[in-house]
Length: 296
Image (cartoon, rainbow, N blue to C red; front, top):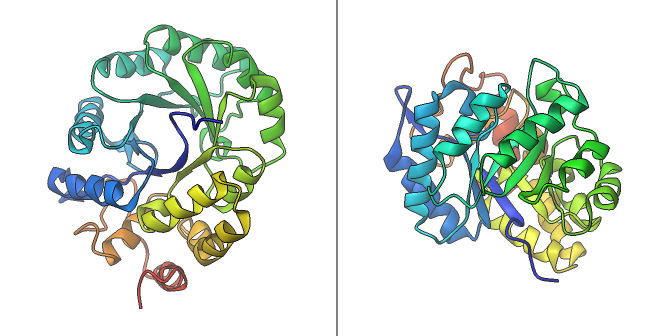
């Protein structure tokens, strides 16, 4: 079976900042790093990229710069979600002809729509664009759960092509495949269960760990997609502490600090209300980086 457009190790890329402003020089270096490491696609300004604390203008600029730096060598997926349908539509329209390969759109957060509300939300976004849309279900952050049945309904809309499922509940995968069809792309949004999801027929992981272990994640996903699960498991075991401990505080707090420790960015700082990783949590992340073999 041919690989779908979105597959493998997809990085939910951090947004480097200096004194609270986006550092585009470091962003360029990060994109280059992922191209060279074999990352299969980049999500620009998702949760990990601090989309919520960037203005719409900044979001669009970061996405367009990421596309420019990638220079057609790696697909760029734009984080375009909002809890206001009109804002998500506006954001999506601003990216027409921008060169992005698709959009990742989070379930509306905080305002808790019904399943029908979610259906209408995504339908309106999809109808406003030709760009492929990936649904993004992360109930732990949004307060709402996009049910497999609703995903099945949405899959009938031509340019809704996949879902990022960050529940970590693997029992959903076969159900979503059954309701949405085998061609509907299933991407794990949970590093800890990413490999398991590929064993069950998932096509990849939108990963936080990939920010600091890009080459390992790319290799692991390639092995898994080739059915070489034992070899993939060896890599996954080494990364397992990262999969868990990059969430000791809210993402992207730990991963930004980890990237800083590895010299990938010059500052570990985030925009408020997110704060730099606390001193108490730092040894845990450091130990995970050591277990992964990323630092001595």
